[in-house]
Image (tube, rainbow, N blue to C red):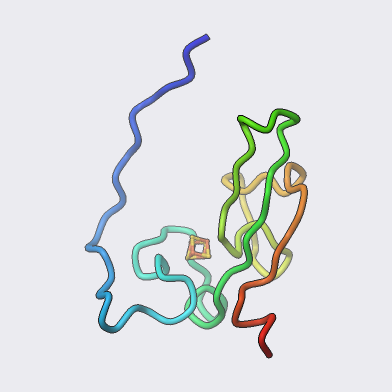
Length: 91
Ligand code: SF4
């Protein structure tokens, strides 16, 4: 089965590299951004173990944590591990 599909672009413009947004760098453009969370703290990285190293993937997003209201876009049951954001580790 061919699972390739076209990616849909997100609206807005890429963030300034000189003055990037606080928190998640995508929050000004993300339809799932949660005010007070995504614009404040850097998100953790979560890993999904599909049982095949070639298929392993990660996401850096609050949506896979209990701090975010979640939704259909976030399959939290598939999360295998969570690594806090570097800024939280240093604190
Ligand atoms: S952390 Fe996830 S939900 Fe929040 S703005 Fe970034 S990509 Fe969107």
